[in-house]
Image 1: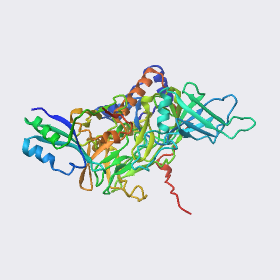
Image 2: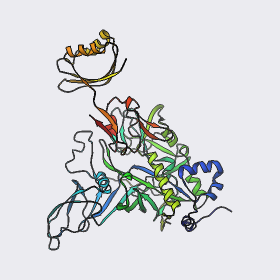
Image 3: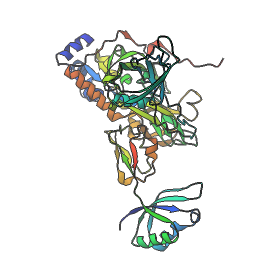
Image 4: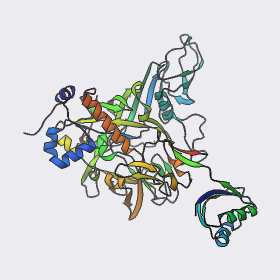
Length: 399
Length: 133
């Protein structure tokens, strides 16, 4: 009789302090030692983690009302504009927003030292942030201008809402051209001078649940050091199974998550303002997702190793910017982590952009939370589309 | 024999002379050029690591040639609180002063190998690498 476990059963064990929780790294060893069937009988939950730059992140804020009241038609936080096309004194500050007087790439490559992600980091650190707002004045909101200082503790709400986080898998970026290029995948040296990748491989949440069997709307997660939830699929959610040149199935690819959580519970260790030279500013976000071992198949995927997980190698000098299909082959995370990969017959130094040690730490923290009985698993109220949905990317045509 | 790190400042008048050649040939010094640049005003800056018994004579020669010799008092330090050990700097560090320790995947910094090229300062996404003077 094959194993079947429910969320409810696992949560009962968590409440009693009896649940067996292993990180995705630890479960790999367990499965190597005992095999999938025996390990599945033993392990209730596998914790995953990732800590990398996630540009589609931002925070909804409500500042409270001044006397007299102002609607706040435009808002700046430490000189970085926030979106205010919603109700009075609400705003959304995006991680990649830049100050209006930023030199951008006019002195190429620009530095992008400060942006929305840095403001979020300062807020979550409890530092004072300068708020400036203007408006046009109405009978109910007569005021036209305000300049003051806020802290995270002073304002009503601050919740992170990240429309596209936690990419299931990502390209390994290289540069085939003869000049240095500055990308969201970092600085890429000419003629295959280096290769950058950005997932935590065997610790990465969506690589460990490729068919979205357990992660869905309502899944409770570690987000930025606090508790968050999966709110929806992310934007550009194109779940599929990556196949190599011969058509062999490799691993999940293309899924994304929209995440939500209370910024007031979070911690600057897990939300860091980030700058990519010549590209822009963003936010590095820490996410950890528990995977309940409902059956053997779920554990089979959750125990995949860096040797069994692959990234496509993509040229960022021409193929990516010009949206040319295809890639330069596939490389395993085990090879990427060794520091040298082989591309077009050349040895290329490889380096990550997402922190593997921090991903490991997140998986460990989440494990502790669950073991202590503080953190129950959230059973999805609705599943997310998986590879079987056949969702394909739409492209933008010029009409 | 000790290694000394110095900064040389060349003016537009002496930037085109083969001065380093003489340091090697005439004073038998071992030179490691850590950094060299010439600005649009034709003024040059060079960071050298020098070793050899006739170090003092070599420095006197440089001063006779009107090259100003300054002690190297700049260093690159890592803000341990900010560094996330992502690893993005490691392929840009020309001397592997910044490297990934395996299998932990933690980024280590061996400041003795640092030649102050400042590539890490430019490429670190969270600005954990800082210049201290």
